[in-house]
Picture (cartoon, rainbow, N blue to C red):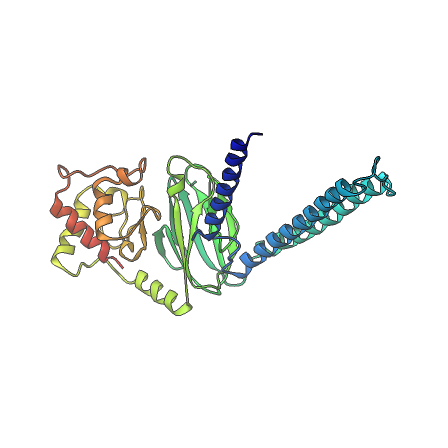
Length: 336
Ligand code: CUA
């Protein structure tokens, strides 16, 4: 190899290393930073597998190194006194059976424990579709989207299904991936013990905007969760200003109401996400952009610019005046 090619290879290696380190230090949620007991158990299994793989690597690499160095300098090298059969029986059969057997026991045991129903879980129904998540709390009468509020330390029972293609529900810090499959209901049981916003995403390729099918699992203490439930169950829908009132009228008059539901209004469409609590959500478009008045106005005007292929058509000023957009934004941002 020429010197130049060595140089290139070295830069490629250094570049790869830098990228790997950059990935490690990014703020992406990691399954190795668990936020609950079940996730901690899964992380433990990951570390066990990593430890065993590392030990095997060190032993095998050590033997290769030892074999290639021993007897150096003598003419014929030193013949080994170990018999081939010993290596084959132990290295090829005995040790792998022990390691794989151990991992099988640990994995099957954990799978059984993680599936076991808990007493008095908080039941949540999640329905995936291209490319967002409908979220319902059947025992509380609450419907929302792309944001799942949960109390810490209470067992969760999340049932998952899909209305179109196969998606996969994954909150790396909270649980393993569970597929959302049309015509089938899968159950995810887990608990969160670390308050905070735990980001989730779709982990199964599902079409054009698969990468923008994210959500947030917001874990708070019991009292905050109860306050959220009370706020969401209160009879809502009364605008508190003239601008918001005009926004509600425009929302119900225009085609918005045909696709979206806002509880206690005439808007009862089911094509798009339920917007009853839009004002309190952190993001828009399934965690595509932050929930700010400017972003909401841009989304209403032309969401295709932000998330191409979603079902919401653009609303240019020939259809919806600037005044209407301003009023609708004020109304939606006022929702609890
Ligand atoms: Cu839904 Cu990928």
